[in-house]
Amino acid sequence: MDWARILAYITGTVDQELLLRNEYLAAENRILKAQLKTPVRLTDAERMTLAEIAHRLGRKALEDVANVVKPDTLLGWYRRLIARKFDGSKSRRYPGRPRIDDEIEQWVVRMARENSDWGYDRIAGAMANLGYRLSDQTVGNILQRHGIPPAPERKRTTTWSDFIRAHMAVLAGTDFFSVEVLTLRGLVTYYVLFFICLESRRVEVAGITRHPNDAWMKQIARNVTMDEWGILEGCRYLIYDRDTKFTESFRAIVKTSQVDPLKLPARSPNLNAYAERWVKSVKDECLSKLILFGEKSLRRALCEYLIHFHAERNHQGKDNVVLFPVARKAGNRAERSVSCKERLGGLLKYYHQDAA
Image 1 (cartoon, rainbow, N blue to C red):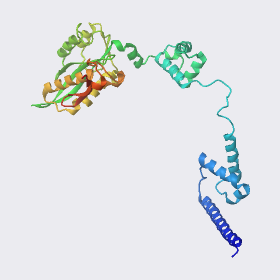
Image 2 (tube, helix red, strand yellow):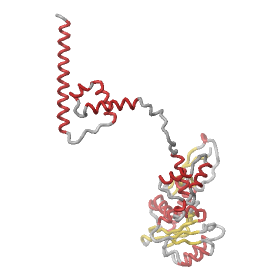
Image 3 (cartoon, helix red, strand yellow):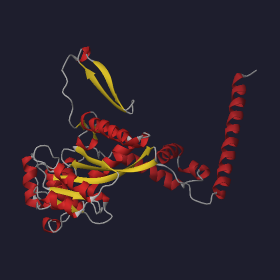
Image 4 (cartoon, rainbow, N blue to C red):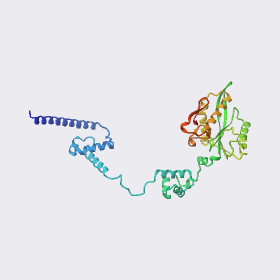
């Protein structure tokens, strides 16, 4: 048998089968395209793939098989692909002033927000101290993009947050919260009065009582304003809400110690946020998880939590450190062991390393 004739026969058969396959796929694509109600959305990667194949097929073949995208569109994609590949845009230097670095822009915005009376020149000078040379116009453009008005407009109003930051060293807050305690007579409501120094976050429970009357409040005022160990020693302002328990005689005694009581507007617990946050912490982390039997049980729980709060608990608002840590002996890290200090039956835990 002539091998050349056999090979020609096989080749012709294969070519005929490929032609039939291509004809079937083209017909199928036309049918599918006719049934589509919306245009086909292609990604950039899909466009590049079709463009490369279309270039190898050529326009004449594309006119027979291209149904989803027109041949001119496919070849246009390929021309843009080639132009993008060899345009040298990565090494091209565009004219004009370079964009301000994001870090520099963040510093400008921070300075403007933290210093309401700083104008463009003042901020530019402060940035020069950090090693960044900016013009006052550049500073103005940055602040304008972030919606920050010029200094004359920013100085007209002082927010409560600005007041707190400016006076935090001499500010204290006070508030009541109630606790249900189980006694022989059933559930009894106790009122806890506490004070918090805003800068140090030091908290003192000034009193616990079932009846916070005027006489009790006057004694509390004398205790917290004592020269030697009163928590208001060194404070200039005391923030409190409109609770009627803060009587006129209480405020008068506080004023005698050169502390000005500041009554907050109605329904504004956010203005005494540090005190409100401490109430949430002591309840969520301690009191809400205990069944308290009598006043002694409540006092013990609060005493244990205060020790934990001051000397063992990390505070996110103070750079995630312990407020008043207990001094411990330093030793070799490899020789130290980890210990866990538990309070209230393991409800409050503190992990630390002991020297060997």
